[in-house]
Image 1 (cartoon, rainbow, N blue to C red):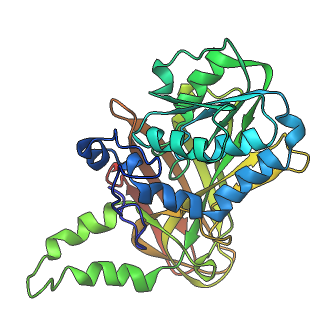
Image 2 (image 1 turned 180 degrees about the vertical axis):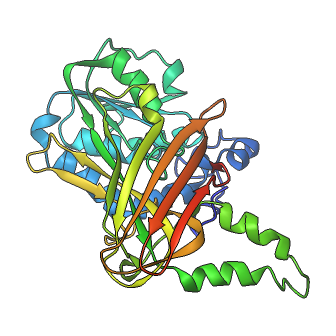
Length: 352
């Protein structure tokens, strides 16, 4: 499983049911076991300004693309993207949400006097039949960690093929997955040495497992040691389920003299139909997003001199009944002034 270095708000608990129109039909079991029903989960999403402001700019800042249109919002959560679309002039928005937060979304939409323009539909998109034959626009925050982990790409593909009009728009519609090398001696050492003495007990056998798990983390810009290499591109108008198995080779050139301790995956998505392209980036040089970056530690640090190149290949695929587990296989080779190494890594399957 992923281990975030910096704690998020996703584990916050909130009471459901009460005054002021707050829904009371979410059971305690539904709330506890369904993390997408946790208010803290949605608080974190809304406070992610890179994400939320980008969607606001793409919708309300491009009202000409939404005026009098029928819009489908997949995974609406609190309904924020549906409300952006309604405010941008959509004729009607069908907002689909599978988790218990759908009841809260209805209350939020009503409180903002948009209940005549927005219909909240509770259920899985794949199982739902919309009351319209086609939609003009699909809006969805479909990106997952390292783009495909716990993503909604397959759901958007299904909705696109069933409901999107010819010439219809998807927001956002393109994505690029990238990789780079970083120096991370201090934290890697902390992770290893921690297991030597855990409240007076020797747990050193945990070291190997600890380093083999992908880590969700915010990397600092000064840690970046190499260029960025492109791993994969997605076009949401043409992507098929088979495209979610990623196989790519890469070359990373060092910009200085240091040790490369880990490889980092991050992504960018674009709203290309806007008057001026709007972008969400999880680039470690950019501001915080809740996706952060995905850090994959090398078994052994690579001593890189300026201009030297680390070559590698990566294979990624979502597995499991609901495709919630991402399997990664990574190999690298390096021949430099101070070392020559070949490493093959299969990090523990990642699931959130």
